[in-house]
Length: 326
Image 1 (tube, rainbow, N blue to C red):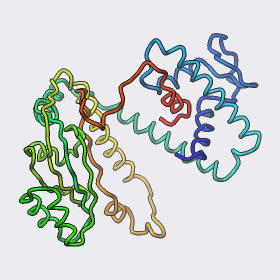
Image 2 (tube, helix red, strand yellow):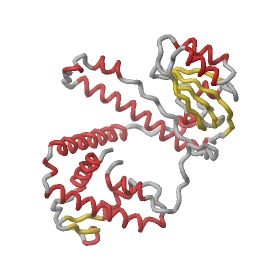
Image 3 (cartoon, helix red, strand yellow):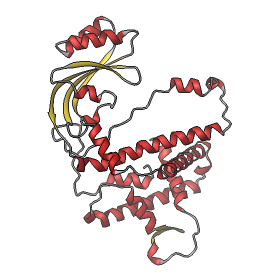
């Protein structure tokens, strides 16, 4: 996010929090600081801190002070912007309206999602049983990959070549001989980090196997499982993550149904290069991937895992919270 958009979100977040407004008399205990004539409340500090995950209880007092300092600087910047009439610049006004639209749309989506029923224990149990590759038989893979650029008619021949190849280099040389562009990558991937549409097939592969897979977007990927190790996750550990995943999935489906209903009752017109309408736009839009529920089992050998949480104050997370980015 560029500096201008950050600045505009500063203005919007302050406006939403009531910065610069006369809110009447407040109890003294609810005022955390006063910046010129504007008060910053304890609830504002608490709301920002709630968006800064990973704060240990012993770090909470220091974190609250850091949040307050950030809000003070934000308010000073807002006041300076208003004094210099930056809030009247067309680009700034447009960015504020864009951010406002984004926030309101997200609020509506959350409202729709909140109306859904929570996944039942039976549904969670069934999902666990139906996806052994993610849980009971979960594996961590050391993979080598070739991401192949689109090329007419390459798919069937590539799949056949990959299945017979003795090394990934052999496939790479075959692609080069046909002038097909590709990129090479690799690393350690836990099962849930694999695309859901190919995970069952990758799970069935043995160490040393090479296979080519077509993605939902129509591109091809060649994967060699260099090595793998079992890393099962028990049902009790997986249950909270599965519940979150099913809730998000159900919310997305509910929102899609709601958008279909709202669109049917709205008047939508397309102009210029978009004159083809919704069907043309839908054809040009790449299909979305559904991510697997993230497990909580440690992947100690994987270079892609995040650094362990320390007791140090998560300053970056606090700054994101203060900026209203999340």
